[in-house]
Length: 471
Image (cartoon, rainbow, N blue to C red; front, top):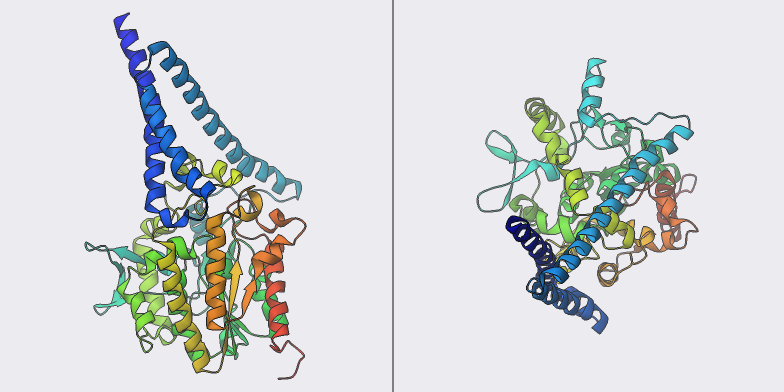
């Protein structure tokens, strides 16, 4: 009986203490990002006062009577179980119900993992590799800086995209694995585009890349049909400094008259930019206008080095793109549930750096990009892409998201760079949730089409010649 009483006492204190620590951790987390929340009394109350009160209350309750403590502990444990049950249900809806939706369109849901797809394609004599990108070819050294994994003759090499001239296995958000033939430099283009004088150059992340839809349904394809040749340098995981690097390496040689800088509000500032600034090589692109790896003339070399790396360390390379514990972490952090109620990474203030500093750094990066485009007589446009939380979550358009939006828009205004607001276009759509594959995913084909239509309207308004309009 004494053991039972001891266990019940420990259990009740443990559960209440856990919740006390949770709210204390939340208070500390918010305090580290305090500048994001000092906009209004409600924000201060929500981010600081409430967590402090609950932390103190739960720690106090660890010392009240055993009977009351046990009732409260059971109640809090039930809440935790309910939260994870909700997360499990949302995962079921996205996975199982999504598979049923695919089946109703007479398509079978492809449940194979990426490695299986690659191996089966190779067994059928297809030169296939999983997608790789520059972000995953940087590794942290003992000083915390990011250095390229690859080198040639002792000199570091940072390729921008996948292995040139191979079949790339990309992603599966629609029930079918998307693959494409990489061009001579590893990007998602028809290789013949490099033989033309491009009308448009694009830099950006996976949304610019056209992730998870066939190439003919991405933004570059739509724009190409309207304006002529498009060189798409979009790569998943690209942030502003890698985008500046890609612009420098390829577009400075091609000199397209129109350059689209595709900005994604979900992680370009808060995750990608602080990480990329830890790379001395990427800092070179920012601080030295003459710096280049001359990648546009080293395609063959890049192909050999990347292929050797992928052949020797395929599993490690894939883990750098798709973390092996990604799904477990999503579940434990209640990722789907938080997205559904509007407390995704941006809303909770998840940030690798500080927003004011990130905006200042982005201002510098975008200004340098604009100078380089102007140096060949081109014009830079800033395209603002919204995150799905805006439309799937009741509280998706939070104060922090508004700060990012207003801050980026102000930079464009200050630099006199035309601002193409895809977020506003999506907000005016009658069914904005249909513009994404699902919450937290990339655009659906319809989403890519509307984004490209919004870009097209601005370019035409700025007298960019379309097909059939004389220069």
